[in-house]
Image 1 (cartoon, one colour):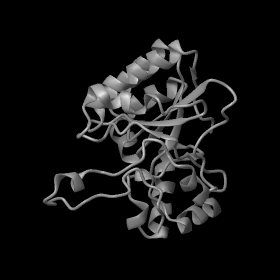
Image 2 (cartoon, rainbow, N blue to C red; image 1 turned 90 degrees about the horizontal axis):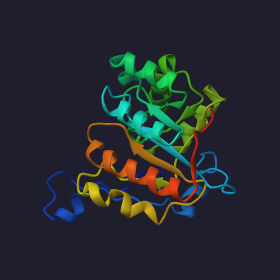
Image 3 (tube, rainbow, N blue to C red; image 1 turned 120 degrees about the vertical axis):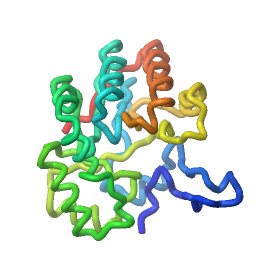
Image 4 (cartoon, rainbow, N blue to C red; image 1 turned 60 degrees about the vertical axis):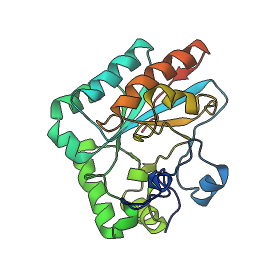
Length: 230
């Protein structure tokens, strides 16, 4: 089993100790973890002041347009890793996303967990999603993917790049107050970082506060925001 996951510990739903109920994840991905999976892309070149924003779990009919509007204020490009089922549910939003010029990536058809899926089913789910998404970029939901699935994916879809991250916003975590979501990651962000937000209902209360703060702060510092090219 792989260790790559934003939620690397999840306690039982009815745990007595509240602390153990929370997801455990690194805001900044440790270097040793990246070395375990060299076939995945964790960050980008660091020579220039460039950040790579990414958004998982969309498209969503109201939240995705909010993200697009915020990005447009700063002429920022980003990458959107879409769930195939959401693409089918919200075709107009997906078309808006395509027309915006941002990169679109594959996030499986039903947001499935690779640790809990057979290799065959997992790859079939990615292939199914790509019928509508049509991308050479893939991000595993939860970051949970087995090494055997990585190997099989490269065999079945040799052009597919597995995109991970260097910074997790933690915007899905309801335990985080919206006003501190950005503050938690601000001083950890460096040039070349791939940053993960979510354009989903669960993440929206925090993402809709943290994203504008991040864009304003790092634009003032002279950073550009670029997409990951497929």
